[in-house]
Each structure stands twice: as C-alpha cells, then as structure tokens.
Image 1 (cartoon, rainbow, N blue to C red):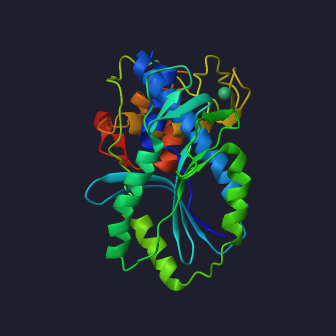
Image 2: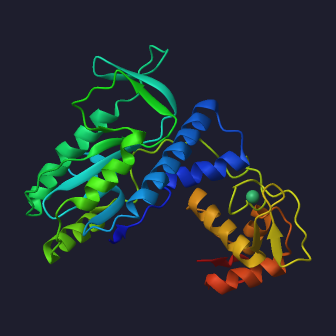
Image 3: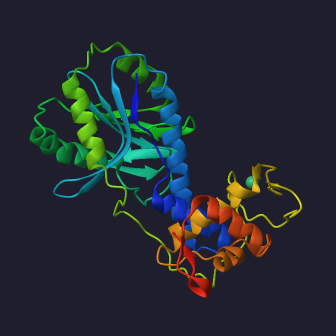
Length: 304
Ligand SMILES: [Zn+2]
C-alpha cells in the first residue's frame, strides 16, 4: 500500500537542529527544539507501523493545509469509504485526564489538548473535502505512541489510541473493506498539491551569522565536528563516528547556510569561512562548481 507523501523534517525543526549545534539556544527554544525532536521521533515510530499495512489505502504523512485557517495532520489515511486523520503524540511517563484536559500526573499545568487539535483538523478538513467533491465520513484518533506512556482516568468515549492499542489499530486498518479508485488518487494528489511547505507555526530565536560557531556539522548526529583531517577525502564525526565524503559534507554546509540565511550570497570565501576554514578555498571552489552556477565576475562572483 503506497505512502504517497513521505515525512520530512520541518523547516523549523531543521533550522533549530543547526542552531542548537552552533549557539547556546535560549532555554525556551531549547525546550521547543527537544519537543520537536521527540514529536518527530514519535511520528517515525507510527510510520514504521503504517508501512507494514497491506490494505488498499493511501497514506499521506505530515500535511499542512490552509482553508479558513492553517492545520496540520500528522498522518492522513484514505480508505475507500472513510478518511482517517491521526494526531500522533510521543508523550512519555504518567499523565491524567481530568474534566476534559490532560495533565502530567502530579502537576496542575495542563498540556495542550491533542483531542482539540484532532477536532480542529476534522472540522477544517470536512469543508475542504466537500469542496473537492468528497463526502466521506472522517474518523481518526489521537495516537499515543510511546510505550512508556500511561493516561490515568482516560475517557473511553474519546478517539484515543493508547500505546497498547497500536497493533489493534493497524489490524483494524488492514481489515476494513477498501478498494481505491482513480477518484481517491485524485483526492490524494490534490491534498499533496495543497500542502504548505512554509507552515506558519514556526517559532525561532533571533540569530545572526557572526554569532554562530563555524565548521562542518555531522550529517547524522548534528554535532559540530571539531577535528578534521584535511588530507582525507572522508570526514569522520568525532562524536558518533559517522563518515561522509568531504564533497558531500561541504555541499551540505552550503545547503544549511542557504536555509539559515536565505539572503546571503554564496561565495567561495563565505563557504570557506562557514566550514571553519578547514578546507582550502581552492578545494571549496572546486566542490561548489559541481552543484552551483557561477554568477558575476572577479571579486563579485557568487554561486546560485
Ligand atoms: Zn556524528
């Protein structure tokens, strides 16, 4: 069963991963970054399960849609007769449900209510599907995926999937009668076209070029690589041991630079500096020419 839209890290999450390695994030941003990381890992856990489904269903991961307002759907499953949006939560530890709200077990500070998020998605999804000519019922659940999550006083009538019910949910999805048609495919394609890559729920700290630590980041663990053997064609992370060809590492550094500073012109000098001055300008220039086009002349040349 095809996953029509795969999951990628959001721009906000990617930027925060880079900033976290290159500056001391203010504590609220650090917390936000850790929440994004945890949430993303939870979504990947859910993906591992949906990937095993054999039934005739379409899976669209991580949709950000705009109707009268923006809304995000972690996973949307299209079956022949029903649409299932899932709100995925990776909370860990003991929580309690009280008078319609969620709290850490021993705290009075409620957490944002995932049932409200799910309901909002359903509410905005309904007219959208209608406008695309679909009048299918919308079901869907909040899925708690962390095996160490417990919800005390959980309501039995709310659409909640507990970690111990995930396998049951997959079994149910595998067994619902579903035969997709070209109409369903068209719906899926339309939703993918409507996906907004710049989702507005972004919260980033202020940062500037000068303030950030320079040097290559590991492609795997995102830590700043402090030792580079410039004689070698391979860059090895001194924290996790991940290795990568230097050319690919430099091009990744450039992509990161463009993401963090979209207005900055990419010059050999700039990239040389951004990579922590470990590789020579000549080397950098050779690598840039593989993937970028040189624009301008003399001291004003830059890459696009
Ligand atoms: Zn690493």
